Length: 225
Image (cartoon, rainbow, N blue to C red; front, side, top):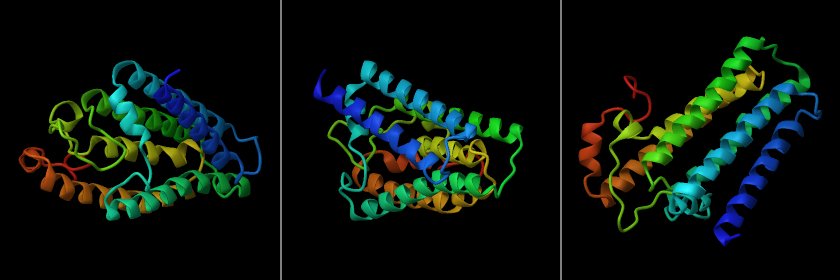
């Protein structure tokens, strides 16, 4: 097993275990079927995506493993990564706390709709990885990087963030929590902050990026923004 493969497998296992802890520790019970379904969807989707990158694009897999505030080179992105991590934790933990104290009663159809949104979000992110080998987890420009304007990038400038937004709109519903939807406010604000800072960075360092922005009008949501 290569160092990259070992790092990918260990990182994936650690993330899934951490996600499980976020789901079940605040709930203080394992009797939480919505969380089990969500964890299964997340584990299968993340594993399939990792396997795809391992088979087709090792360079992108390595870029995706370099993640977090410490990996960022821009001070602004270091701060954004911290807020993004907090928003992610809150998006998972608040529905778990909701389940513990039974604040919400969410019928089965919205829960299943939430699961579908999570799967759809993963699929959009997969399309991004298939189209763009430079879709690193950090904001950077490498020597041979090109502007990608095909596939999902022909629809919005930041399709990976769009996929993440779809996924985390579905997360509170999938976990059976109406109150968890409140976490969409800090999550969306963090995404907007990050993509605006990313656009500033890329426009200054990546040739033709400004022209791409003029060509593709919508940043995150088609016909809206």
